[in-house]
Length: 141
Length: 393
Ligand SMILES: Cc1ncc(COP(=O)(O)O)c(C=O)c1O
Image (tube, rainbow over all chains, first blue to last red):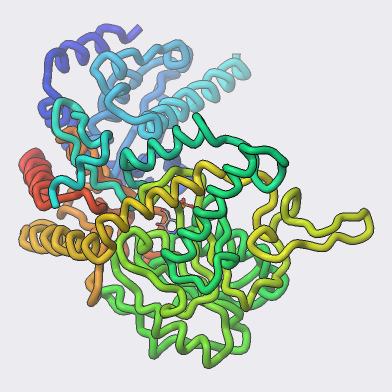
């Protein structure tokens, strides 16, 4: 599906030292549109992360998009990439997605298990939303 | 004092190609060769269950275990080594007291401080007590004059040193007041036992808890000092090794220390605490304190010098941990970048959410020191922080 986007990201990070990787993530984080304060609710937040993360989803013409935010900039950079890969996709596409870029750009191995669990909870939440959407689409059809 | 790190093999390694600067000692300390060797030698030559078998090895291991108890007892100035029991750690020790005193705490009050670790809050809540904090000022000085003891107050349970801020609480003043009201005092010494010379008689507490792994010994073992005054409290945990006679109708218990040590304890762990005490005493607790004070003050001065850094807590005496945040930079980001520079710190709420609440923050970056840290380590921390700031420019 969106492998082109993932491959583009991988290329962008290829060969970078950690300092440049984090700088890049920080710049992505800074560019990510902040979520309105009113939506940063308990319901929209994800536990299991060292930093706070909020997730909202939209359905436009059957395609899903995610609005993500975090109080930590590096986390924000990572979720900006996740959003880039999963946004504007059909639920089934998201469910089938293999987000291999995380491993490939060295984020998985750079993050301790506890930390990558945080990332894992974010991806789980996204898949959960996609599952619910896919199921409700089934019901409608 | 630089050579002190030489006894700790783990510190020789490089992480991400950089010298490891280990500043997460409040979470756990590294182990000297003498402790590592003691543990492996125990399993190589002495391993056996204690107080049970009528055979040679059982004699040897029982003796070593009891020697460890005596060593701890002398180290903390207990009157009698029967006042020392081995537990699974500070958390285990505090829960044990909470369970033993449970019936007298239900519906009553336990007074703590505003800087407690969750493990000195939750056990009291589980026992059915209300937990209230002795007031403190903005700098986290306890306002002991405003401490309110009522007829509902059944216990005072206080950290000696904050695991987040490094503030040393004036526990002696508190035990003196408690004595006037005949209220027992538990001291959480998890963050003081490795930094300050301690004497339970001088402190005047009834219970004192600490962990082996934060004082250069192994994980999963700790100590609970229970003053003789409480030698007859109900044991929290029942099982083998702690009973006098068991029948299905009625069971009677042994006297302390065995009364409080049901089941097979962490024998190697207890012996490792003894080896860790030897290690510290060989250097000298006063010398450790002096050296650590120098490094600690230096870190505080360096951090306070920085324009965009907020340092939390400011009390007369401080040791161990120092907490800070960089303006407009999340503690987690700071920690991630420091990690890549080989500087190991902890970030987050440090199991002290009530304190985070009073400081009005989500978390901090915490650097915490041990006897092997040096001013050069602090310089690396500061260099790391400067790098973090640069990356956010
Ligand atoms: C002040 C304090 N109390 C209790 C604990 C709990 O210690 P343990 O996890 O070893 O039981 C800690 C550990 O972080 C601590 O710093």
